[in-house]
Image (tube, rainbow over all chains, first blue to last red):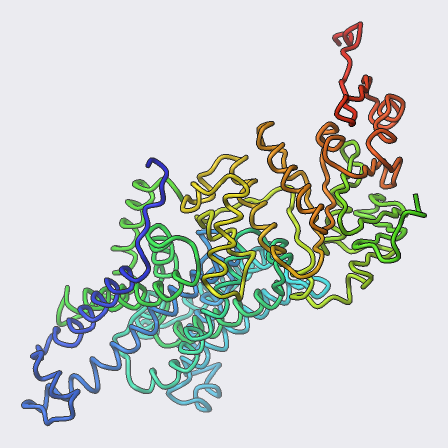
Length: 344
Length: 270
């Protein structure tokens, strides 16, 4: 069977991913600068009083929100990657491509650098939400702009969207560069951390503002599974099969902008998840989106939580930015995958 | 042959004109396909065959003229309902991602009980002689195998519908070996015989002569000649429209074959 598809049954795949997810989650909750025993966690979840008050605090206020945020962010980034790759019919499509990330980054960096001066009004108005709100709005605005440019006679041109995204990324990147140039040392440090992605300051507040958008993306994405399968045969074929190709495009762009915008707003720029996870799972489960999207959510969540554990533990008590860990781990793994599997 | 027309053909194309980048591609073209009819669309490269198929498929918009399916103008069909009346096989489908042959054919049967979908997809894979490729990833298949998988998908879309379906097939046998070309046209013939209408753009004059009820020979965006294979495929027409020097022989089986003739003097080398 030379060219026979090496496939995992989706059920087996989900089961394995679920075990990995629980293991990563358990590890994330117990390990770190302050070790917490597993039975402490069980006691907390069942409502009983923890033996150790510090453990309870560490768990509830630090590790649990961080875990939840990591799970959601990882799931959203991977699902968004799969959605965009299906829409563009290109395994290299990434949420960064249509301008979400660069727009969010520009707005966030603007708040970090100019929060005390030019954007003092915004910071005063939004208080501690200044950064996440700005990032979210920036991401949504650039995506909207790319999408408007790609609209011609009531239709969205996928090629134009891609090109507009590239141009917008370049301009937003330049803007971020200029702001970096004017940043003082303090701003520069927090800016660096943010552009490399981090869950270090995760709080329940972050969860509350970002979770609704991320959950919306995760819950609505499977509705696009069937039309996206048809899109794999080309946009005209999807139209022949009775799907409204324009609604599919709108849906994908909207879900990606909302979900990734929210993810970037609270955790900064984290690359590779949207690229590696769907690519790897497509080799394993096939390209059908009904199996692929839920698997991407599980695997993305697992990967991000695992990478966050590495980021927290390797240089304790300090931390590495998770984006850095992801690039260090993800880059080589992706290369090995490409070399082993010639089939892209 | 207007007198043989029923009142409401399955497909009616009326004085269709279409320009792309200022160039006239279709020039007041009028054609029809009735239920139960296999119509072959012929013509030299650039005659406008694919554009006509695309116009009826709703991919390009005409400047003037009308297209009606089942008597209803194309623009007035709800998308999902149209998908149950019209299926389209484009000339080329480029797949990047590894869907299996089974999954591709199943795309033609959305929203259907699993058991029934399974039965129909299996049946159509067998009908196109690709049953053993069901679990293979389509991008790894040969060109001819991919073409038959796509055909199975197109057929699946209108399979077991309670009304006549319209099939638009653009060069659907171009990558097939002769035996599979015959197999496919045999299946298309059966589809027509069971009441569907087919418009099949094809370059192979002999396949058209062998299997079609009627030929439409296009040139410069218009219908040049239309009628039975014997009426259309004459040495004169072939010379005039294709510039092809050919002998036409009518077989005892009742249809003509076209044999291009090698010129007595080869073109002078430049």
